[in-house]
Image 1 (cartoon, rainbow, N blue to C red):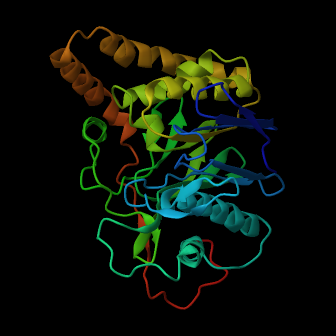
Image 2 (cartoon, rainbow, N blue to C red):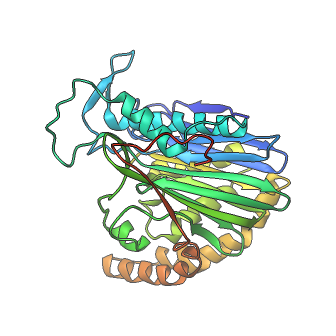
Length: 358
C-alpha cells in the first residue's frame, strides 16, 4: 500500500510535500521540505506498508552537498543535478524496491549490496580517477526502520549510515534515539551546538557500512520516526525536536493537518533540507493518538520549553539547554548503546548474497 502524496506549491517558498494515511490501527505522516526548489539534497521520504503481512518500512535520505556537490547530469528541464541530489533519490528507490521484494517473499541481494550496486552503476565511466579525499561519488545518508506487527507488539529493525536518525516515541519515555550518528562525537547536545563531519556514508566506489539494530517486542501503541538533520539539527535543545512533533500533533485535527503543521514549522526554523516520516502503531483513531501524548507534551512544556523560553542572552541559553539535556537524556539514550551489527560494503564485494533479509 502506497500513501498518496499531496503537494503544496507555497508561493515563492520552496516547494514542499506532505503525505498522510490512516488505515486500521496505523496512522502515518511524512514531510519533505527542500530549501532550494528542484535542487533539494534530501530525497522524498519512504513509507510503505504491506497490509496482509502487517509489515512496513519508513526511511529518509540526505545527499551530502559538500562531498557530492559535483554535477552528475541534467534533468529533462535542464536543471543541473549534483551527485548528492542523485544519490539520495537512488537510495530512496533502492529501499522501496528492496522492501517490495521482501514483502512479496521474492529473494534477492541484501539491502547493503543493492545500495552498492545501484550507486555503483550510476558512476560515470569517464570520471577523473584523481580526486581529493573529501570528494565522493553519489554520497548520501540513510535511516530506515523496517517493522513487523505481531499482536500488541512490534519488532523494528533500524538501519542507517551517516547522521540521519531513527527514533521510537512512547507516551512514558518520550523520544528515544535508536540509531547512532557516524561521527566522532556522540553527545546529542554537542552535535546540536557544532556540526561534525561524518565518518561513514553510503556512496559509490568507496567502502561504507550499514549499521543494523533489531528491537524485538516493542509494545504498542508507539510511534516510529525517521528524520534527516534538517528537522532535529536546528532546534534549541535536543528535547525540542520531540516538542515540535507533539505540539504540532496536539494542534492538528487529523493526520493531514499534522503533516502540514510539521512542514510549516520546520520551514520556519531550519537552514537545511528537511524530511521526516512517522508511523503511529496501535492507535484506534487520531484523537486517541493526540490524547495518548497529551501528558507527555505537558511534561515537555514544563521541563524544557518553559525553561528555554525564559532565557535572555547567550550565557542563560547555554545554561538552560545544558540543564534541559541533563533531564532529557535519561530516557532519550535508553537504546543508544543497543547491540549493533555492522554490515560492511567494500569496493571488492564478496559473492552476492541472496535470500537475505539484510
